[in-house]
Length: 280
Image 1 (cartoon, one colour):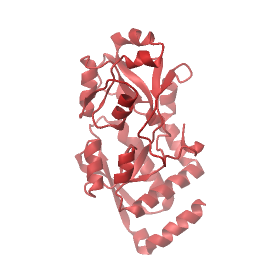
Image 2: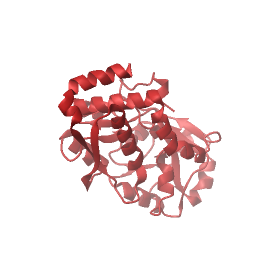
Image 3: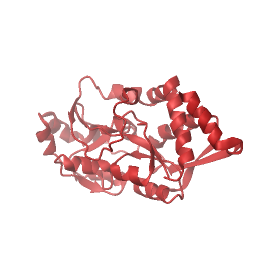
Image 4: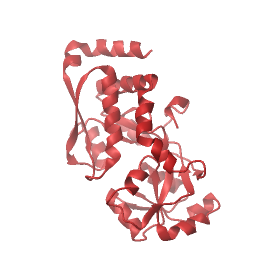
């Protein structure tokens, strides 16, 4: 099936487009120590390598927050691929490649807390008890609406880096971070030493982080989709994923950690939940 898709793509592109070099611009990391870009960029490269096209991956000229990056993508300027958590609005305004690049783990959240809060969280016995504590999230992140729809009183900021400062200063009780993000943040030299990962609890909700392109850039979308599907089929997708995140799952003590399940009212209908091979 993948060979047929690749052949059709080759035919639709034509020889000249195939032999040209595709310049793929992605959002520059927010800080020098921000490692969250590493895996998505490597995955994009892997997908393009599966198709055989010539390509050049380059960061954007300016540092772009998520909202600004998505806006520029929609306007077809500055960047031509962005990875982001999906929601209904984003799938209307942009073109998603519906393969969850983090296998859904972007919706599995553990809690950054201050050290002096750990004992308080150990006394939580049910979801209602957790809802009494105030989380911190990005003002325009889909996660904020998800938490609010489940009864949480969320403290927000538009600045990613300021969210950690808010937690340090006690403006909120915990900062839910995904299993694929939290350990890089915890190990960062920029993180205040008073912050730790709470050892026993988490929340999870169904969601996916996709690669998005401009709605008119169907050829790039097709390239990425075919390349990702081929990498899934030949095992290279899982190899790259495990290379980056197997240790993160070990550090999370998944066997002894309890995750409260909450609803995601923003989940688009076309999320490929039925494809078990795409999810953790």
